[in-house]
Image (cartoon, rainbow, N blue to C red; front, side):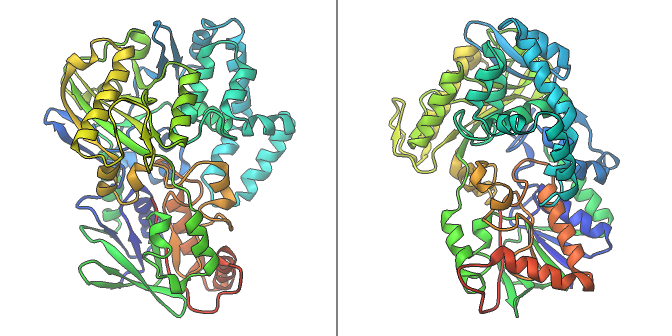
Length: 550
């Protein structure tokens, strides 16, 4: 009987398992797919000579994460690589906003868009210099992050107090209008805000866009040498060297609860795996509450909260094997960036977001495009490019803003039509792009979900990043912690604080909570915290059960 079972071998599940193994626990990780990694995998499925990252690709949060840093994955062979430039946002007229790892170079480039914008960028960087370390600490520690928050509050007061707080909650459109005269700085922050499901007019999108821009400048957008799967391989090797077990092709269908405590899990094959200490669920929140854990074990209010749970946008992705570099009209500035944002300007970003809000398939989709060979030369033969682009679409399509009559069934015709639309969008900024396509792979929303059940129609953040589902509201109103209403069951997925991104924090927080609760003097406090997290309109009157992420 293992001390702990971890459901899901995504990065959070593997981080949790490693930390438990470090503490001397016996750990089994059960993964539904035939290989570990969740949304951190790579393959040669587009073309045998090209390595493609199937899901996630660039990892600024991994580079900043103290959780991953402490694991020492370089000892397991993990190496990181950077493109010459972090991020570019080209415009059809050949101008290009560029985020560099050199602060002065970024500022100099923005000055070309409008006089004074270099100073504006330096001002935003000065704020990061004062607050960045404490923001990172607050992000990657269990909620509430008491010590880092106290330090952060003191520094916020010294840096401008309420005026700075106002800046962080501004919509990114308003923030960049106040800070920049030219398009360059505006596009860098707004495009980075759209790495989440935050429209340019959404509250808090300014703070998120600023955070992602500063992380990119400070840490780059690095990639694992050899493919995203190298990060997963390092986590698995580390765990196995410490005695942990990873079992793939083992889909968990139930968490067994007795007397209010998680005591076992049951697989689709009918196997019951008992646990002596804890179950950690790296699964989507709606799949856990009322799914793996039967409704009768959960407080009524929690079940009602699940009805209100909001996913982030669905995702549509295309992978390419290109016979040469992308021929950007903006030239070297875009060609040397690992990540490229493809949209004509701020208004096109707003138009894209508005179409999603109206449940329309965008006619000119905003693209995040990755130039993987530019970032890591091992990904394809010299002179070629392994590339991808993804965009967002509605979960439920009401109409097509384009001319293809896409209904959201995502059958073969609709997939090909929307992939062609994505390529046409790239072609606007890189004439001749389509002539370079040697092979392509289409990953529609349902395809992404079939490959990783946590990605509900490709929702990559395990729930919206909007303010109403963050901090004490993530995943539901409560404590914002990994404890659940079921004793011995912990939410270890990106559905928990601090949310999506490959940084391992939700898994680490869940592992620490499990380790604390195993200490006899802590158990009563843990029970009280779990009860508070799941308290509904009335007190829980029966035994409790368990959760999942996406």
